[in-house]
Image (cartoon, rainbow over all chains, first blue to last red):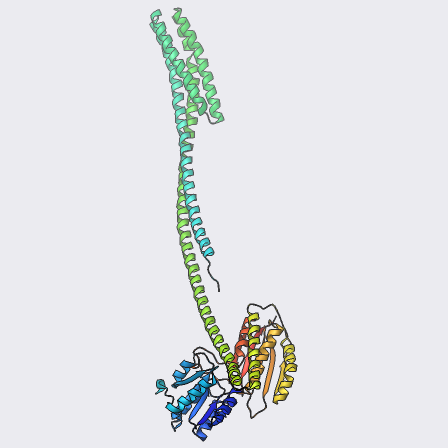
Length: 130
Length: 427
């Protein structure tokens, strides 16, 4: 069972997802924006971060960048991008994560993607800035 | 942006061709006219010379008649009579022919008078000549010589008439030749001027056409750039709409899978709001006829959203000057509703949400400032290429405002939250 962090400014979906993953036995925290999410990550490193792309304060890509730049273990956390933005694959490519899913999605797809990320544990690797 | 059309290009080419054709035609007509004038004047000169020749023949014929009379008197014999009669008849016939030939050549009244005098004097001269011949045939040679002596002063009169006619014809020929020279010079000058004018006009037209074509090309370039910008804007808008639709759709999908009716209902409500905005937007394109007062629209919106603001512990502050702007009341209401509800969605949990709408008359326009203390929208152009940062509902608001002839911008760093500035033309 894993420690999941959902960072999403949507009013309903994050809490609903949290309930679902908690039902599966995972430990789940929710943040409404990137800055708050980084505080949660600093407090305790999650196993996987489910990250929205467009958010106030810090966007999803900016939050992922900050995790990478802090270089204190956060850079090894797999990040799953969840968003309805057009060109999500390009955003994921820039962030450097292989895990992304566009809205709307089927729940089992998301659950499968989380399971895959927990199994592979491939952290974002933005090659362009390395 | 002025766009050149095939019709206007054709008109230009036709005008260019027409001007060229007119110039060529004028030149051809001028040359033709000059030739006609030349031929006419040459004919008149020819007539004058012919007149002189005929007058000389008439005078010469008369002198020959006198010489025949002299010869008959000297020869003094019946054998010469028939020979004299034949020659005399030939001279008379030649005179008649000359007189008939000269008559149509008479152009001026003084010439006609001189010719009439010549004919009269010729007739008057012939009478003593005929009498002298008759006396000579009757062998009255002395009397015939006396009669012949009276002819001398008649010859002087005929000579004077002939000289007058020659002078008149000579003067006419000289005058006509001077006319020919003058007309030829004027015509030559006109043709030269037309040629120079044609060259100048052609150069002017060529320069103008070049400028016009350059202007068209520049106009087309600007239009292409404008269309490209609009395409980018449309792509960005489509991407934003797709994103805004996918968010509640996702909530509906997940909520439905989990049997969470309240989440599905909220997602449906959000989608309905977006669709209503799109429907409003579809009505706005190209319509600017309606006007509205932003202060009244904002007041109505405040009353409409009052309960929701109270429920959320939020505050809506209005400070608008009355005015009439070029945007319909329904569409302006939709714009403010989009922006205010978007601001409410971005409220910070730790503070009471405050949304402020300020409206001021600014020159020929009206400026609406919608500011909040929620989470600001930040610029992150890496997200989706050219997509610009925006507050929720802003893309729809911007398209409505731009369709009404105004502008809409987001200034995320002006206050603690987001500030949106709308500028509309006053009606």
